[in-house]
Picture 1: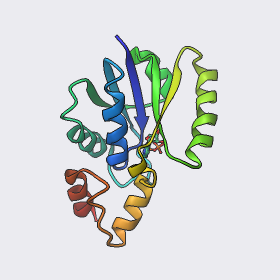
Picture 2: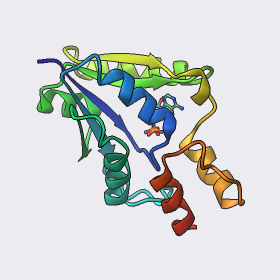
Picture 3: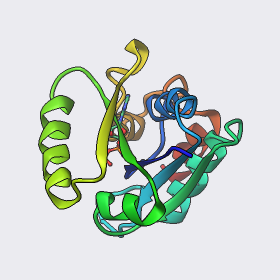
Picture 4: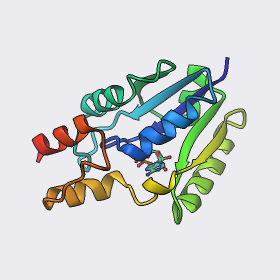
Length: 157
Ligand code: ADP
């Protein structure tokens, strides 16, 4: 039984995240999406909202479950019995960040590996932060997020 943890803030979930989860769910028996439970003032959606939005985005994937997590991702992966942590890589500076973080995580938990999946070409430029920024300024982001997320963004703004 191969399990993986896909941790992130997902504020909010977008099509790039869903694409990674759809592709990764074919490689594992169970994929746990870990929504970072943080009250950070920088986030637009509460932890509960971020979990609900992600859950609704993956109802078509029976081996994916979405839950919150607190603490360090590799420790959480170990507690959940996940063999590895999944991350997505866009072209550009994601590599530097993920590489540095993966080495730190490995230092913390040498038994938990980090597996990165390349973002599909269509989502290379898709960032939650940029989506929020342009949506706030009136842009239509309907082609970048699931329909229920677009509706939630409109309501929030
Ligand atoms: P954070 O690292 O701040 O929690 P996110 O929650 O947005 O950022 O991202 C969680 C994971 O999803 C990270 O591995 C990130 O690289 C990946 N990711 C984000 N956007 C995309 C995208 N467009 N395509 C593929 N992977 C992505």
